[in-house]
Image (tube, rainbow, N blue to C red):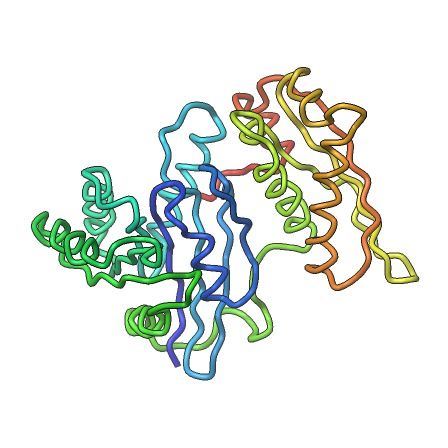
Length: 295
């Protein structure tokens, strides 16, 4: 069989996490239309009789503005160097920009086998696909390009087969029933952050971290989860909570539904909002909140 690691890289909002979730067949990474949704390196594992592909979901490439985004970009750079193949995900609907060309060249220069996936082809004119391929070809990029739609499931089998051919022959990296390297507790925090990204606008979601204080399954099978939503400013806390606590209650109820689906059990959820000023620019606070370098 073939087995190995594939770094999934691309600009913020290119659709990397959505694609990985579909390829793995389970939700292993949260998804939202906002940049910086993925903050950590997350492994998603697809196991079949003839192959095991370990997809490395990385933070979207983004202009660093604080210590957190610096850390995220460092994670992406590090993840790209220690894999068997690179899958560069390009938002086909947005078109191929000069920045895309520059980034594809940068990762191709690492000498690691690479493919390019054009995502979101279900919402773009078909004529744009060959035009995008032509732009990459004229720039001297020789990587094969696979137009795909994660939402419609289009061309995903072809993409999987092409990725497989880039992997070495060898034993599976993980047991066949493992779909991610992340714990249930980690995913619970991510599900809460996903709902905040979907619920709130502007800068507030990007200035939020989630810390799970209690994650316990009782004898009756119900999970008791206590978590903190950490924000940067007192006025952000007021917005997160909302008038008479309605906004936070709605968001928590929204998150609890997904937590119960993920855990396959009832969840009793308690949420508090706390202020930690400028936590995204404080290295000690980043470590305390669970963000670490992926060296």
